[in-house]
Every structure is written in C-alpha cells, then in structure tokens.
Image (cartoon, rainbow, N blue to C red):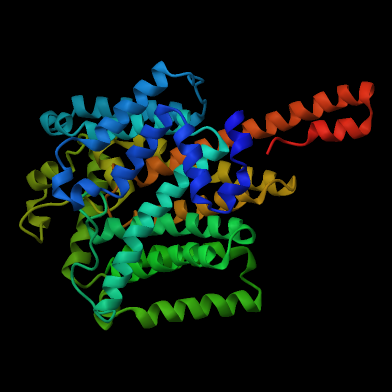
Length: 452
C-alpha cells in the first residue's frame, strides 16, 4: 500500500506524531470512527466540559463505525471463538430477561450488554492491521494516562493522605474509585509492554513519558482506597515475576516494591486491610456473596433475571441488608451466576480462560520463532491485565463495564493481525522459493524482505 511506504512502521515505534497523524488521516472513515469512540468513551470530554454534552458522541461514533464498515471497502469478517461466545452470551441474557423476577428491570438496561457486543465486533473487524492496532493502543494509553497523571498529582498534592472516596474519575465508567482502580490495573501492563518494546526507538524524554504511565497508574491504585484494586496490583506484580521467583534479584525487587506500596498507603487504608471481615462493608459483601450463591442454587438455569439481583435481594433477604438499600453483589462471578444462572457463568469463565490460554500460547509461539518482540510484550501485558481484572473483580460488580469486553477486542485484533502477518510471510517465502529457481538466491533474498 502507498500509505505504508510513506509512513514506515519505524515512525510508529519512534512515536513520531506527524507521520502517525498523517497515516491516521489517510485511514478509512470506519477506523476514524472507532478511534473517536475510544476517545469519547475513555477521555470523556463531554463529561468534563458541559458545553460539549449536546449530542451522544459515543453512540454517534459507534453508528459511524458500523456504517463505515458496511458501506466501505473492508468487509472481511474476523473469525474467533469469542465471537460465538458473545452471541451465546447475549442469548442467555435475553432468556434470563424473559424469565426474570422483574422483566421490566431487565429490558430497561438491555443496552448495557448488547452495546459491548456491538463495540467488540466493530473493533475486531476494523482494527485489523499493525498500524491501526498501534494507533488504537496509543489512544487507549493516552486517554488512560490523562486520568492517571492528573489523579496521581491530586493524590500527591494532598500529601498521599486518605479519603473515604479515594480518587475519582470523570462521570462515566471510571468515576467510582473501585472502577477507576480497575482501569489502572488493566492499563499499566499494556503501557509497560509498549515502553519495553519501543525503548530502543525512542529519545529518552519519550521513553520517560511511557514509563510514567505504569508508575502513575499504580499510584492511582494506591490512592483509590480500593482494597480490591490494591490486592489485584500486588497479585499482578507477583504474577509478572512468577517464573523468576527463585532468583534473588527478583525476590529483592518484589520485596522492595511491596514495601514501597505498604509505605505509601495511608494509615487509614492500612487499618482497612487489618479490619477486613470486621467492618460493615466487609460483612455486607460476605452477605451479598452468600445470598447470591443461594440465588444460583434456587435458580440454576437462568438465574433470578438479568440485573434482577438487587430487587430480588431486597424482596427475599431484607434481614441481611446492613445499609438502607441493596447493592450489586461486589463479585463478577456471583453477579453472572445469580443474574443469569450456571450455564452463563460457565460460558463467562470459559471465555476468560480461553483468552488467557490462547494469549499465553500465541506469545510462546512468537517467542520460539524469534518474531518481532512487540506482540510478544503486548500479549504478556494483556495476560497481566486479565489476571488483575479477575482478582479485582472478586470485590466489585463490573461485568457490564468496558474492561473485559475491550480486553477481548484487543486480544482478538492482536491475534488476527499476527496470523495475517504470518500468512503473508509464508506466502512471501513460497514466492521466493519459486522465484529463486529462475533468478537466483540474491533476488530471492530481496523478494523475502517485508515491505517497510
């Protein structure tokens, strides 16, 4: 393609803004709309600046991406087991809604599930080249870094002190401190992967900006007052160094990081950890989990109904409400099982496990072949993100938040691009073998070189 020759991939690795932006302008309308969606969903300028909030920006971007895909020149459908899994997932949601204790509640929030399925499909089918993937990831990183940097400064500005509300993002999915912490949990490993991959292509100041991303993200997790997020961060650090755990240097590094985390935690937050299981919040969550499991046992096939956990709890377990009203169960697996039943829970777990194992296998395959380390690092970061999400998800109800569904989309896009590049490389090799017979080895070598 002409664009690829004008904007070499090295410009992306070097974070050269003008060439990258020039490439972005040359891209399809559908891809621009996908990027617009990500920007408005994660940066949320319409929430920060009220004068912008006069039209539904994210919905318009999604509609634009769909129209661009349907009427554009890129209609090749990307295949993945996750595609089938998500369709089956939505069927479970519909069946659960029809058989819910309060169907009106279910159908009033149906878009909380189908919107993510639509967004997943437009991402995996449009973000289908290495350059598009990198632009998409850059937007994800920059919008998340805007949050992490400003909130890390906020926490530092108040002397790393404790507040009951922790740190809060703009109105939307990341406003609550618990959900904000999860976004930082899934963000920092990908930022770390990009920094590690691009280090040798960047001037020091750009590299320092990239390394500031995971650092500020971790600071936000510590300042968020979210115990689940902080436990997930510690678990991620241990998971990342698991295979090197017996090395003295690694043990010392992990201990140093752990000590630093504990030192930075305000005394009030340390007290919250010491009181786990004793404070009202912990007791209420345990009751949510216990009664959620009872709901799963009494309604095993379709649950009590999509988004019916709260009305069901208030009706049948009023004696176990330590607050004035019931909340969601504060656990992603209890939320799925209680609302949708065991079959949906098995499907949900299966998709998570599949993506984890497939990511691990793909990373191992690339590493054994000595391929470009960029995707090796990104795949490694994706699994660290997924582990963090699952651990943090044991303490919050975020099944219908963007975290997992965007993660699935990023993985499937990444997998699709890797497979396409492998196929293209094999095709070049076959052509080179045929070409060498007629023109010699030197010409064959020139033919096998990938386009810049």
